[in-house]
Image (cartoon, rainbow, N blue to C red; front, side, top):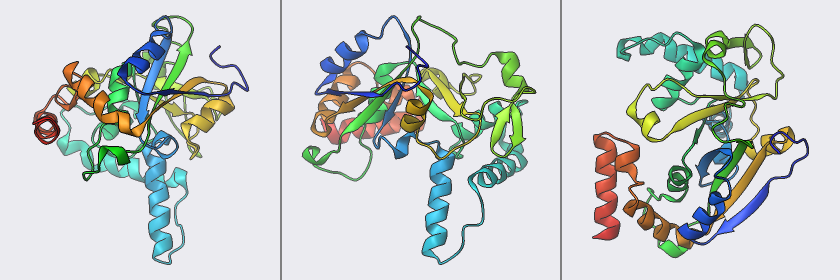
Length: 274
């Protein structure tokens, strides 16, 4: 059951696309969000946490003390974005969460963690390989996290309604909330306005905590009793899965419907299939 305290996350292992589809077929009657990850710990942290931790390592390597807490780091970064982004925006966001969605879309680190309602899209982001060439036998395992939000299909459980989105604002000490304070560990879902075709094509939504924390989502999920399955995909199986997803139209040209997305897909086809 979603939200059962003490619920342990289970791991399922798949060898190919058929195994994966058979596994997620059992979730068809539930509301489930999916997220692909290369690293099952680091990639499940919000990008603002990863950026802050990188800042700490950089300063440590230079023999400097850490100046900013995670909360101060987030506040300063988002404030700088708001001050300087206006000339580049067609419309100015009116709510704080919408500002975060715009910032996330343009690659600024935020507390928002990307999810998708489409399990094949999450699988693509998990198994895709865009780095320097490696023999397929050396590819590391990849992961998809399937978060069962509700036992009912198409449920709005945990998803903020529009009036609540408008009321959410920073409250200090890393908290985002409305007039009535939230519990610090509360996890909420945010379905942003369609600010770009990418959000629509990726069937995207975001999760975030009421109080920003460096905790990786799997640890947070177990603490909060969220019903999450960790699906592990063997590294050598990733290329075969990518080829099957390409035939099904799940590829960067569709997920990033612009010239960079098209170019990335054509390059992948040329290098791996020609």
